Image (cartoon, rainbow, N blue to C red; front, side, top):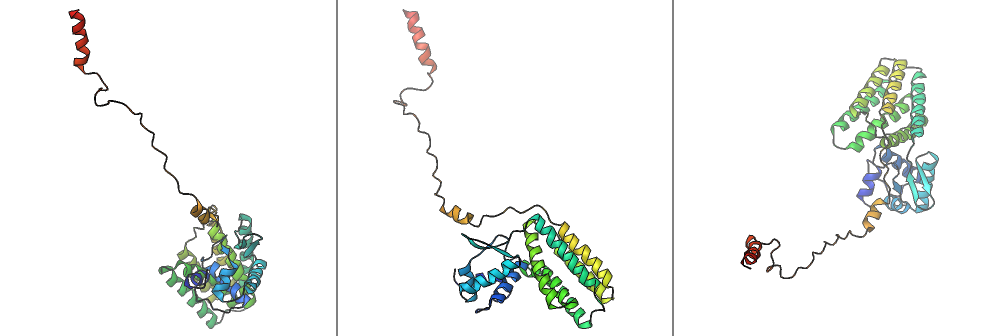
Length: 278
């Protein structure tokens, strides 16, 4: 697959830059996971990625190794790189980690957020509200997840924001695998409430709202979605066409126009008359 717009739309909500570095490639893949454009179990072909980013396969392998260390992708010796498919245990661990980190950072907030940071958070949830009304589900999913990254950056800084970005991407994969029913509008309203608590200087209240918010997202997980074999389309394409079963041949009958299937009444009476005449 060569470079082109379809690959770029899958990888990111923005234009994919060519001649990217390994960290940039990894970052774009995580963004695509956050937006739901890359699904659990999806194959990430080295050559396809190299074509999209305009780099060598060696650089792509370096980016995939970074993502593997962060728990985003895994490699098969025969089939290449794949996005991970989280288990129920992985889901529990990821959401527990998010609750611990996000409530902890809010509890540790020493002073109220500045007006600039509050304005940044408000602008973010307003973008969420606009995205919910728009048809682009990928952008909506990305912004809802990125709120937590933005909050971590405002409260603590870029180091914790990077950690939350990975954790949020992993819970996005979990929500895809286990068919989350958590409503986007409800998520956004919960984000608004958290920012309002911070604006009033109530860090402890914001932490409890965050605990309830993440807990609600975790509780909305349902049954695992059916796993799709990435080779199934090829298998289907290579199946020989089904040949219709031959119709059963009717037995050939001779003189069908001359011999009626059911004897006529006259034919059955005539021999009787002859018998009487004898």
